[in-house]
Length: 332
Image (cartoon, rainbow, N blue to C red; front, side, top):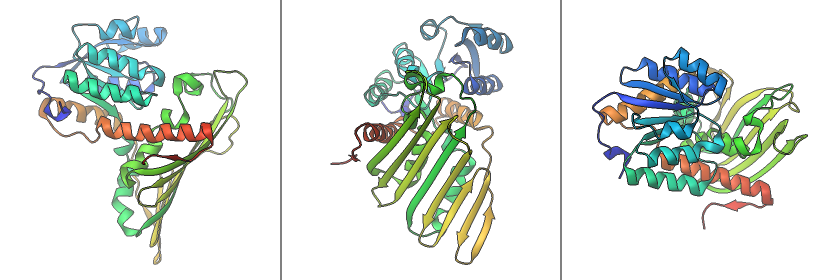
């Protein structure tokens, strides 16, 4: 059954939160500020769980397994390491809970497909967060794309130097996943704007002194869209990088859009002008509100699990391309 056909909520949603990091804190704050939800329990890093449980006046749980089995929860929000997203979502859906999960839904395409099918079977909401679609960059692109004519090339680069690189889950092969799966928004932003992908090439490199954790990763993917549009997506982080970059360039036959950090430019034959780029603040709260509006009022959501799944399939193709050195075709 479609998410659009879910029965509307008629009482406060009782929520359990899995995670104690940055995203989890923003989710907790959004849930606490909405009168339609009650934050019942939280689990994650043991030390941080106790602190946050006290701060948010909620119950600390020892494990996510215990949390998802609680009978007094209606929804589970998953904000923990990427590697665990799929199995937590499966357990929560199987126990009759709605699920909000930060992207990626899973680091494995087959598991993600099974989760989407399971959510329909049990008639519960499965919402994969993609707040990049709600942010200033995305809205600016939508506003100005039609001014630059037929598009032919995109370069999208996010580089994050860190000296020294932290020894944390985001630098762990298993916990984070292949870079463009763990950072799925980089591909999903482009797919949302420019449609389906025909072929994928990709190259990656790691600098590391132990098998599980790396100090730097650098990943470069080349996408050819069905329209013929070419895109280069560069993602890197760590201590071998020296210059931070968050830049997106979209070239068309009549002009170019350049988004560089918080600065935007529209380049046309008549000249170059600065364009306003909206904020990235408050997006987790906006996403949370939209989910609750959907559950209580039936309002449409801005993203479906199937759309996130397609981006995951493109990211998986990039992984296979990087591993094999081959061009991966997404269509026969």
